[in-house]
Image (tube, rainbow, N blue to C red; front, side, top):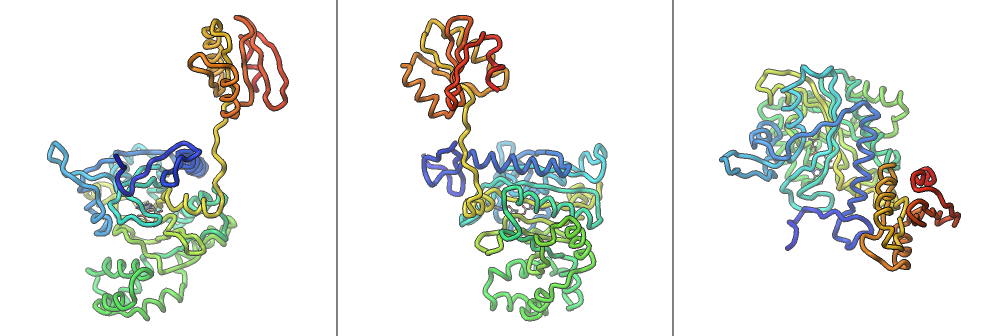
Length: 412
Ligand code: HAM
């Protein structure tokens, strides 16, 4: 039986095959994501992986709706696996926002599902670090969130030479569109042409833009002008005060594909442009209102960072640590008569917080020692009798004999 295309198996290292993913690397990434989010005062939340289909068809936009893993469940409900976290977050916040002080700063690490064409950096399932800030309109919130994004990437050892945050604004594009005489009803169509500009043939973009009364040259001129709006300037100043100026640049080419973004938008890319976007986000000031049917109106912004592209970059830059999880102690059981006392010792050492291994069944002593070495244990412990244990430091070869009760004190 093979796994489905675009889905991954995660194995502990050393990896048995090129075509599988590292469970250790995944854990490493999750731990860093959590640590940095907490440092910025974000709290963890989660929601269901399966949601009513309607949650995603409301406001995410055509692109993501076309990629939904949706079906009818046995209760005749139209449901979908979550392709992104933001609508779930908006629903959760709208339901209980009164219980939380504003601004709400929450993060999550959901597994998401999108029926995409499989390609480099894009699979049908990925884990995405989401950090969102709800209840604050001031650009200081945007700067705080972008600082978190930058520091998250820096926590993996990436520098300003490796990545850049391309900062843009739908407000700036909205003004451009309006001044150019664009029809408001087609504004999102226009945004989608801009979103695809880098990846589309120029003739195709020209055709679509001219139908809306614009040209590629006009659009490109606006992009290259790169003049920050007052709002973007205030974000740049805020980041500069933190010493993070070199990690951001204004880039109006970025507009984001999802329909719900309302203002500042941004994407993180590797500087060399070899990979797909590492992360993307922005303001979505109307989504909570829309999802709550007008009951709750809260401004919001956030970003999502996937594990797939991040891992590709960390691998390419040699930034992944070596993953072996050495055990602390291997308890040798050479005399089976001492197995019950050995089990007691093992249990006590584990209760004291040590990682302990031992032979599950009667095993020749040379095999036990070999296993201890494979596990890279710091020490072996062997009962001398029912009261004393011999502890050996495998590095220094130092040995001590101590009473079983105090054995844990000799392991630190
Ligand atoms: P997104 O741009 O669709 O935004 O996804 C964010 C990131 O998730 C991407 O930059 C990429 O790293 C990763 N990603 C997306 N799709 C895939 C895929 N098929 N395979 C691997 N990685 C993928 C959102 O999802 C927004 N909801 C983010 C957000 C949160 N905006 C506000 N708050």
